[in-house]
Image 1 (tube, one colour):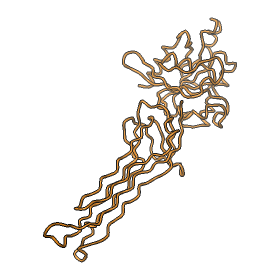
Image 2 (image 1 turned 135 degrees about the vertical axis):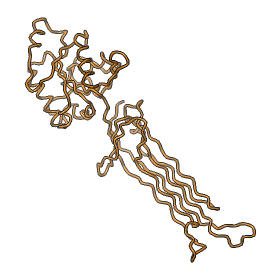
Image 3 (image 1 turned 180 degrees about the vertical axis):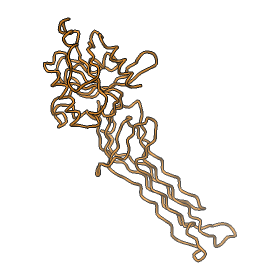
Image 4 (image 1 turned 120 degrees about the vertical axis):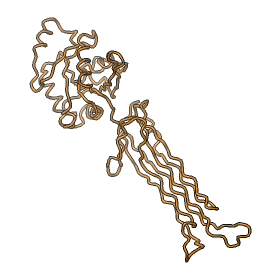
Length: 327
């Protein structure tokens, strides 16, 4: 199951209390203070794992708490630090303060440790409070509490190319042909109900990733259809591949609508490089194909590709162009 949003509670460990103790050694009847410091509380750390692609685990486990630090001991022995808690998440996960919506960190680099909340410091033992005027202090410092907060996790897939198009434009078929991804494919709108991520092996020892999101419809930026829910998954892409079905009655209107929805959702997304391609060319006659090759799209000045994912006709030029744009 693909889950790209979750709310959880994280709590760092409290610091251990400092100890009040005195030296009790043979032949030393009035030993000085010997209370040790408390240990530091454990931290909550997120680590992106490239083997994870969903936030499903966080649907069932909502609380994550690091270990508290241990109190100080006698003979100036410090308490043990609390164990950190390591939480593995998919790369591309945004971590935000649930109350303020402030971004805490963007966990995009696989294997890197991101400290979300830090443990409280341990309290100082009474040995740290001895002075020339108070050589036998009978008080110590309490450990500091660790920070706790509700946070929200929002996953944005990390891909090089984002597939954008109306429902049934052929995006799922395309990604299933050029990669090992196996999305559900059928001849009706909204077959894709979740984003799909595929790795395209390009020639020898080269590859790039492609993200397929549910089809966009007019008004998607307002929450209509399924596009709005998943548009964030192509925000990190370097180039957008816009797909239009060859049987679309008004290709100019559909291109303008796609561009409008991207702009209304995010100007940054709309400003990305774009490649336009017409899909399902295997269903055209020679005359229809020749007519399509002469078609111009106002507002688009790049190359227009015509292809069939089923017959693989015209696919290689698209992959070649995408690779040139990515390197």
